[in-house]
Every structure is written in C-alpha cells, then in structure tokens.
Image (cartoon, rainbow, N blue to C red; front, side, top):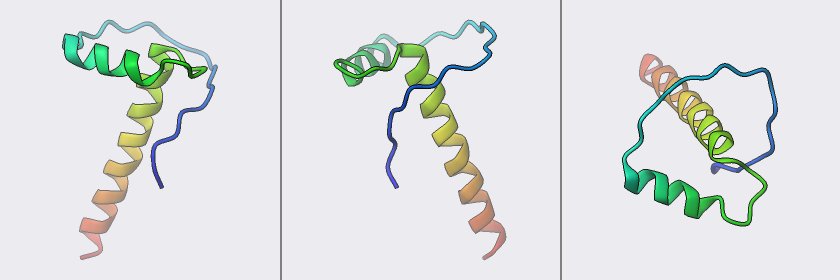
Length: 63
C-alpha cells in the first residue's frame, strides 16, 4: 500500500523543525493542487514512516 494524502484536522501543538531547502521544495511541489497543507503532508508522512518502522521491527522479531 502506498502513501496517500488525506485531509486531517486534530488537536495540535507547535514544534519548530528545520528542513533542508530541497526537501521543502519537493514537499511544496508534491502538494500543489492537493487539499493538504505543508504541515498536513509532514504529519501524514511521519505517521506512514512510523507504521513502516513498526512493521519492519515486527518482521525482524519474527525472523
């Protein structure tokens, strides 16, 4: 299953994070014409990554 963007509004807290300029540009290009903000994209990408990491750890434990 691939990464899919979706609208997501929940209680939030501000965090300051620095991104390399090329990553910012890539994200901004990826969200053009989509109903998702920069923050929404980053949150969804992090959640996807965390699930994949958990899945990889589960698979490693089962080997």
